[in-house]
Length: 191
Length: 279
Figure 1 (spheres, helix red, strand yellow):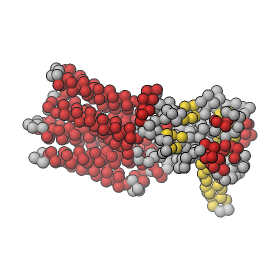
Figure 2: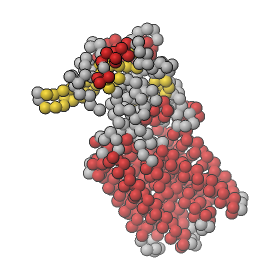
Figure 3: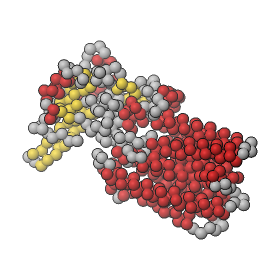
Figure 4: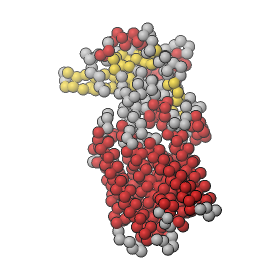
């Protein structure tokens, strides 16, 4: 079973938001809509022991995607690579998928009246390129690949980081496949 | 989640239609009282379902693609649409049976089928929102509240019909008042249970905290809309001794429970933040 997803090394992320801009440019994301967003977590602690990290957020490519289950028309679906996509010709704009997403990472386009989300730039990956956010990242902190393939780059990066430093967002049965690397010497992961 | 007004009015009117039909069937077919209200109350129920259905389409970005929902029969929208259609059909058949002077048994069976569908629809209206992604909604108390809210509205709507019908049976009025008080009592218990759920729900957040409901930004809606207008005033009205002013009393009570229904739904959407609301 192939599960393409994103792994982000937060130790390296500098919060420049190049990924946000590249995503907007590549996918023509409408003003007011967001497919990915870099958040600042912290600072926490007391000076001089203060820590902070940046958290790039986007669709977590859940294995048991609640958005796919909630969609009444089948517009939200998983493709053969395990990437969750929206068929805009089928979407009725009911926004139930937005309610079902535990992370609020879907967006409603008020112009086209359909729901949109990160596609992992499938149009670029189809021609052998990396997603726009991965290409634009100056810190090389983003990786995309098949998390179920132990020889893939994402699996190697995860393995190298060590299980104690690999984190996922809260799981309510949706099994998010995206993973974040954050070593405790940089900052403590905030649930 | 911002307040989805079309869905607020969708569930409100569908609840009104379901409640009115359920209470009417119980009163007329099962208790055998005031059968003259059956036609008018059934028409009100269908009209409420139609208004609710029309309201729901305003929520959709592309209602013209709605039939695509037939592809996914387990989704909440499919179940709501299908039950609305089946209930509408059941009420039409029930009306035809009344019009053709069908036997009491036939009317009772047809009415009961419709009432069961109405109970299911009122419940599914709330159940469609039960999802692990939104901690404040992830409880079966929510659909139970939708069902009881429908029953409360149904009691008051049927009360209006009774009060307006000539030579109405005082025992029927008393029964409706008792039913209204009982459903309001159940609603009170469910609201308390819902508050407990909010307090202990996982992934606590200020946007869905008990403090926001009781003493924060949502306090006016909770105390004013739900507790005062939705519970205290209707209970006082239903406990009032019977006088000639009953039609006005029950009309005022209906307005109160409708406002409370809106307040409850607004409160629900206001609490509907995801576990992580990144965008």
